[in-house]
Image (tube, rainbow, N blue to C red; front, side, top):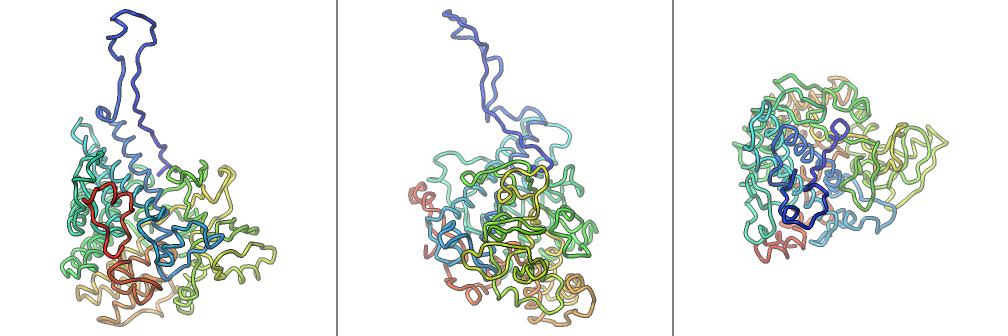
Length: 499
């Protein structure tokens, strides 16, 4: 969001005249100007500033993307040593516990997003102005986005309606059941889809299409977790609305999607904005403006054309490399085979680090910097995260139709993605029934490899235990509530099963 919208920091301050006096007039002198969190929303610009603050937390979802990938069977954690970011290493090995710094960050940052969204919604009736429904709709979209991340990762979570959490709530507000969280997500996204514009007022803002796509995704996820057939129908209907809008299409060349020139293109339904013009710190990643998932994923000490050095994380396994069919044009875009790259570019050098597989996640590794880039491109990479692509809409629709018994539409949307992947119509799927469903899931794996979706695709379809080494059924479907949160709740919140 910050690539196009400057962050406005809401400062809580009280100002008074600086006059030296010993009289009662000085003691009782009225404050000429005062603003705090409880009397802030008095103009349209203040609502806009608060909304930008709610968008700001989207940039922290780099941790969701990283862990969603190497928690799966697609990649290894990697890093510069076996102890580089221990929290990531534990998630990769499925030995994470309630004491995990990276899991705690995810919990904190997503709830911060909810809190900032609720800040707007708590004061939504302060004043009236033209365009307020759009702001409220964006705030509700963002709250739904953060809630969706939280329910995926942690299962039941506390909710407080349109009110902000305050100290002490953790001891009295229960964790809402998963079905209640999804119900709140649906309510927010239905409102958002009915009030958001189809074309954003600024690049990076939520749109009607984004709300419908996320609504369809939420229906699909709950359906696959709970096997509620009617939810598959609802998912198909909402995703069909996105398709019928004709506002999106597949980019002809798959390679274009992940380059700078392809940002916010016709395939982008919702995209998280990053910039490289403001620096950051490993000690305060919440404030970083660049896409950390990108900087973490490149070859260590890389020197050569096109790319720049990274921190060696998120290393594709041979298993994902072998998942691509012959002639699949996506493979070279998704997987950087470093040995083959060096054959083409003998001048390339890099340093082999922990868990070296010979492969790197080419979609999201650092590219050459711009002239205006801040000092450390590992922390300030401008590559946007394509959070919802139109290909995802098509394959989610295919899955929902397959589970609803409409094989014809399921195959239609699956093959639309495959036609682009192979550059022809000679690789179309003609399966029906369970074979078609399995083909859709296989297509999701190679289409979105490296994009952080694989773990939850495995979990929600009941396939995680057979694919992920160390995965324990009735435990690792969700992540542990951070220990501090359990302790602060004073027994109000029970830890997730088997943690």
